[in-house]
Structure formats: C-alpha cells, structure tokens
Length: 150
Image: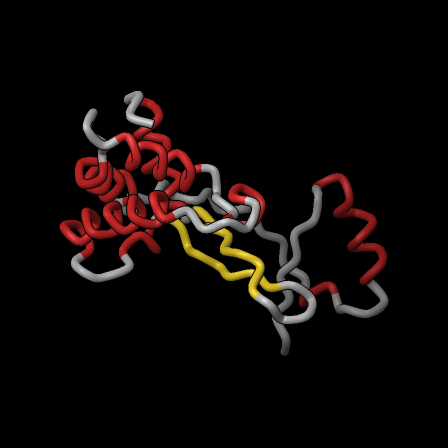
C-alpha cells in the first residue's frame, strides 16, 4: 500500500473526495488535522549575537562597515562594481572572515554569513561573484542594523 499525503484547502475537500471515490476505497482514506509546528530554538539568535560581537565595526573601521553593508544586501561584484576589482572591499571581507574565526574557528568563515557563487557569461568566461546571504547572515545583519552599526 502506498501512503499519499496531500495538502488540500478545506473548501475543496468534498470535491477531491468525490473525484477520487471511484479509484480509492473509502476505508483507505484518512483525514488528519494539521499538527501545529512547535517553536524551535535552533540557537540561531545566540549564534548571531556571538557573530555580531566578533564583527561589529569600530569607529576606526569604516571599510568594515561598508563591507558589511555591501554583504548585507547580497553583493554582486559584476553589477555593483561594473566588473572592476575592488581591493579595499576584498581586504575588508578578509578582515571580517578573520574576525569570524573566533566564533567558527576555520578559514572562509564568511561563508556562514553569505555564500559566494561565481557567475559566468554564456561563452564560459568569468562574469563576477554573487554573495547569497544565509539565514544566519540575515539575522546578523538585522542585529547590526538595529543597533546602528551598519
């Protein structure tokens, strides 16, 4: 016997049951109420607070603040930099990644906040890198914005 679970709007239930009645014996049909999803404490807020403490830009770190703002909006090196390299941004990203080692303990920890994805032209040549913000990154940037750090 195959178990099939489908989600149906309550207003459509009668029509669905009528439609499948010739194909499925009524004793094989069971209706369930949706179970409420329990709140999950996945530790994301606590981890985000640790990350914020590690990367919060000081007043003497304007490039870090700019890099965090750039990263928070999902930076695209081709569209935002017009295909030109930005050494200052690269260095600031490196400094942020280095600061994140105190929380995550490995190189390229910046990937916990945003995942870089290289993009290519149709001919296969490199176009740029798009940074896709992770759920942890979204929470970190929300906290940094709320406190006025970025």
